[in-house]
Length: 100
Image (cartoon, rainbow, N blue to C red; front, side, top):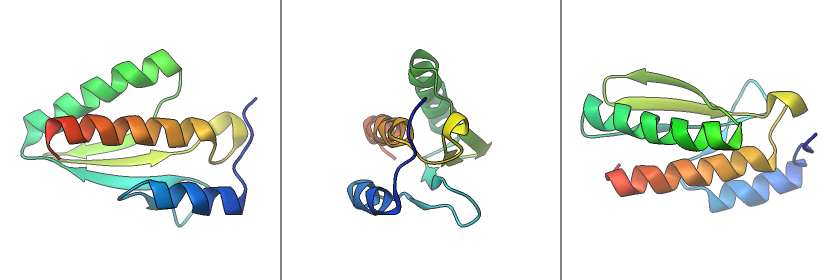
C-alpha cells in the first residue's frame, strides 16, 4: 500500500506542479486543462488513459467540450500519494505536447 503525503509533503509538491491546487472537500489535487477544441481535449484524455492504465492509477475526470477537469487521489490510501503527483506530472507533459 502506498503512503499518504503529509501536509508538508503536499505543500512541497504543489509548488512543483503548475496549475494544480488542493481540492477543497477532500485529500486530493485538482486542475482544469483547457484545449483549443474538443478534439484536442479528447486526444489528451486518450493519451492520459494509456499512461494511467499502464500505471494502474486512474484519474477522476470530467470533459465538457474543450475542458478537462481532473481530480487525483489514491483511493487505496484514502488521500494524496506520490502516485498522484507522478500522474499529475505526466498529464502536464502530455498537455504541453498538445499545446494546452
